[in-house]
Length: 131
Image (cartoon, rainbow, N blue to C red; front, side, top):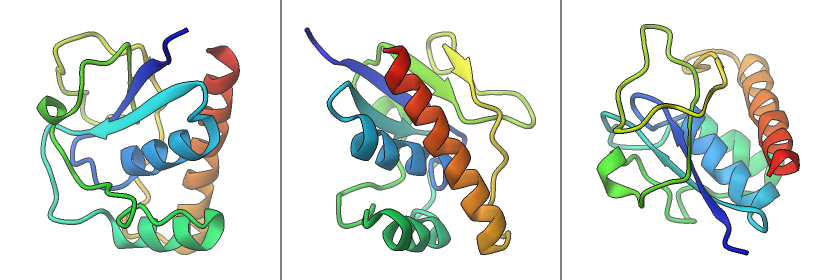
């Protein structure tokens, strides 16, 4: 059986979608392939996300080659998940299969950031069970 390709999409591809890609690889890599992308890019992944993912899960997103990328830079996917668009999701060439509605933790406290990371972790675990 071929694994499904799942893309996690948010506008800048620097925080929530990057966390989802990393947790997807870490927690469900045997079930689906994880990618993240955006309609715009940032020069670096959110450094709070990098730090907290390393501290909490031992995942070094930057060392593992993750970087902010456009939708055109990832393979064609079977499933596209919006991380949550507060102003309307971008068109990515296909309909979104799900919208997780997760708030952007950028600039918030570590406690608030960790709540978002835990939300994403639970969503990844649900997706793994569903596939």
